[in-house]
Length: 172
Length: 247
Image (cartoon, rainbow over all chains, first blue to last red):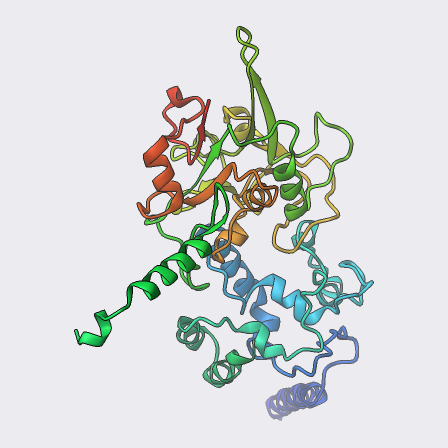
């Protein structure tokens, strides 16, 4: 009898545990938790980045690092994963907001997660005059008029985006 | 070939030749030379090209600093009014012969050596030479030790002692790293010409020629073939990419 009680007790604990897990999953499934930082999105009507948002959140540093070495050492100057183009699209041209400020595109998350970066000790934290793409077609900034570009972007970016790039390459 | 293709009248031939000659010559002694075609943005630089410069000291005017100011503007280099520590990527040098009192003026910049001593001594690999011969500092991995500054026989490199707050987006620069002439690599990669060369030509001196010294058809190769181009400190055997005439 005592044994049966113990078994029931264990089962109840397991059920309670599972219920709590299920509840937490439901609670956060639909939307972001309220304490997450608000990342400023481009105001140029762009709804998609060079990669899906989740991928960018997780791996933007890898794309940037890869591009950095390629540009520096091999002179490859494609725009898709260039830090300069991130800034041109995400930070308004005449913005008074500087890196370090919670409202800055990069700082908004980096301040929250306490990850310090030193990119902006050298790089510009805002677009250079006349270089910002806010208010412009966002996709034209990620394309180069060369024919080879399309094949490359098919390799690295998702295919639907590349097709869009190709269509709008002529707008530049 | 059909007959109509070759049947060109003498008059029209002369006219066409004259137009072509006029297009090539802007002013006496000043010629448009074809700039190498821009490589596609996604293509790596190759060792089939070697970028170089030829500087004619006879055409370089003493007192003219157009190249220096163009470099400063292009790369966002500002003076702190401390000449001993201010960064300089290009400077004007005057050489005076003690005997004859003859003076020549020339711009001194990174010589983009084939065997760069700065690359040899760099402990982190930040100093490197691109495949197309341009010698650069990767400031992402430069630790600011300044060995390269000591190794360079041309005093071409500078150290950023102070916070840089006026960077331009194509030339990020920052405190605590070494920097030097990049041969305006951001322009060259897009088929352009370095800012100093452009300024020299705009100032109507045309003392600097930029181009691919591996391409026998480039203007610089033709000039080098015809007149030669001396290396400064040729005894070091560095095979510099920047050559001088009249020294």
